[in-house]
Amino acid sequence: MAKTKTRDRMNNEINAGSMADIAFLLLIFFLVTTTIAEDKGILVKLPPWSDEEPDITKLKERNVYSVLVNAQNQLLVREQSMRIGDLRENAKEFIMNPAGRPDLAERPTSAIISLKNDRGTNYQTYLEVYNELKGAYEELWDELAMKRYGEPYTDDMPFAQRKAIRDEIPFVISEAEPTNFGEED
Amino acid sequence: MAKFSKKRGKSSPAISTASLPDIIFMLLFFFMMVTVLRDSELKLQVNTPEATELTKLEEKSLVNYIYIGRPTKQNQKLYGTSPRIQLGDKISNVDDIPIFLEKHKVKVPEAKHPRITSSLRVDGEVTMGIVQDVKTKLRKSNQLKVNYSAGKRVDDL
Image (cartoon, rainbow over all chains, first blue to last red):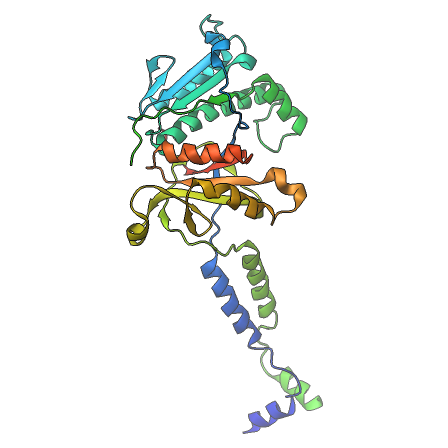
């Protein structure tokens, strides 16, 4: 009884004790609904649309690295079948041509990757191939950045340095219109 | 008042919980900031493939999402079983893409228009035909920044 009396007397303030409970309620609501889903993916710059097909035949054959992915998800790289796992190393050798072989790219700047797929190719396979080709270039950029600036190639690098590296080894990929094999329903 | 302070002084000192709401509010605001309320319900089954060379998409307001996949079980009666495109919360076809892009564009300030990215969330089992149609449409609508959504792969091929 004595306790009630004291409470009555100090009752000139709004009780903020339940504030924590309300905040907790809101907090739990947001905790449950939150999806900290990081959206990651392979960033690609598509070429602008033009009605005429780019003419690849004008290029020297040694500078073109043709990759074909057929509707059976098989890989044909420069007229030879290959496993996806070997693609990265092979592409790196083609681009840099360290041994100066006459059948590989003259310079990294003149190397062009030509990627072609069927309409029936699995998207997963296509993305894996694209990933390997991009990976080959990223590794080369890394190596060059290490050699020149002593740090790996990242987005945190000054823009001028990144540009210098990308000018030295430009990522040029040409995607031809796919052939109509294996189109489903 | 004198009586009141006297009483407090006598009682054993308890840990003050007065700052508890502040702490909770801090957490609350953090979660409110990072929360993105999902606005579109997926009508398609989309399992994005895995890859290693990933880039993180930064500003969510600059991204529009295009889903491609087969309709989920409960939607198969309505939409069939062949791969479809979902824009926002609607199942659409390729010709709706330019309008969809335009609708997203008007919500973004003019200066940021060049940074708009299309995130393609495509099921790994889908064939390239439909993806190619979407890509062609994007190129024709001059939406050239595209992100093939993918998870992180840890093991080797």
